[in-house]
Length: 143
Image (cartoon, rainbow, N blue to C red; front, top):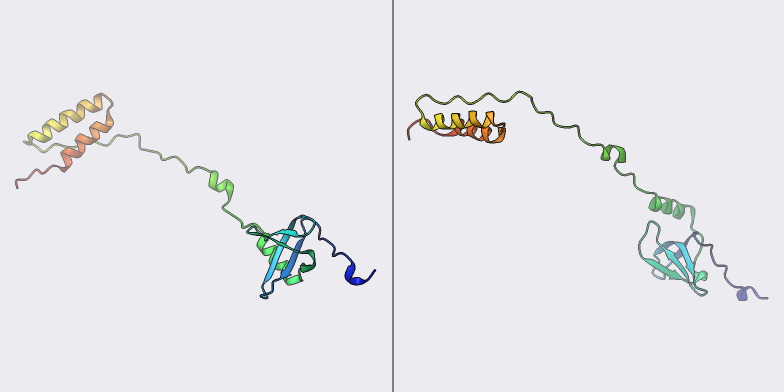
């Protein structure tokens, strides 16, 4: 049987192969299937699949194998243990802020101070803080 009549061997499934395109571009791929006529390949690391005749494929050179290793090596991500660990809880002071001191003679401060005391007795600390802010922030001097 003449040498040209021998069938071209089909590469094994999962083997990486190389091909040179007519434009001189290098194509690398992992053999994923063979349909009897064409070999189906997947680019290293994912990407667009491509097909080639078995006669167009060759084994990759050592430099091409190094490139394949780079393209197929997963990138190290964030440390999963560190990422899933929660931040420590925020610890608030047990001591309440001291009540605001109303300005003597200011009717608005006197009313707000009384409402603040009422809210503290009712354990409504949010409303008490609102009255405390009102005492501290409203103008006490004339315009």
